[in-house]
Length: 268
Image 1 (cartoon, rainbow, N blue to C red):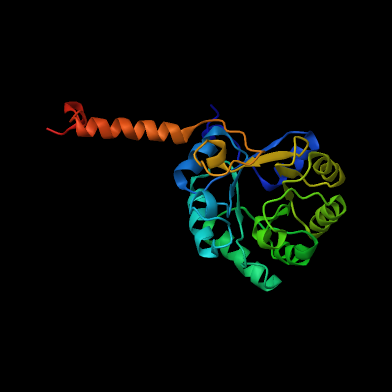
Image 2: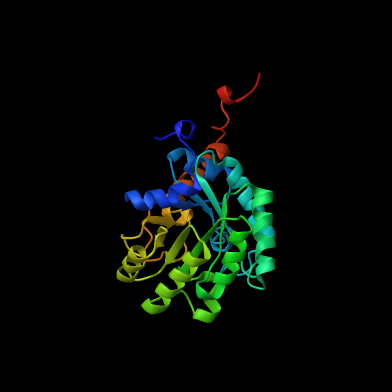
């Protein structure tokens, strides 16, 4: 296993370099110190503190109720654990949509209070001017187009986004505004490939096919911890939910039969 002690920290410039070299960028979500440390030690390039914590941590139907304060809390823990991975934190719903000034303040708080390296916000042409202001303030921005969960009420659900002309226009607008990478969520693979080829910054796919410059998954989905809805694009690399149930059952049985703790686990 790769150890973070031997790794050179993944830097902002590495996103563009990886795209130019054809090296895939690996991204996973993280919401706490322990998990972030494990993912970092395994060698992940980038950790995303996603507002997806609204569903997989808080148990809500959408991400809309996640607050900036909650994102600051989780992003600080993840940033403290990450020794080499590049940490990006989401700005949650209504922490940047009101005005560019609000966006700069929210993004500035995120960097100052958590030590994360960049922020991510959702939208294309409609937020390009806001992105430009945040970048001009010296804050790196990752874009996010396609299915944008913070707009789920307007979109009418979690649906694949197929408007190629609009998606290309959104991607170009974000690049012109200064983003260093763009997440493509729930976009047909052919359209994602065209966007990836058309822009100079890397694309990070989630449900956008294999031709993106990198991939991101929600870690509780990837590890089989979250047993709610499983999107088509999720590949489960473990079934930790079952492991937790089995381990807990064994612990309960040992306690109830006085097998735990034994003499070696007790003080004399």
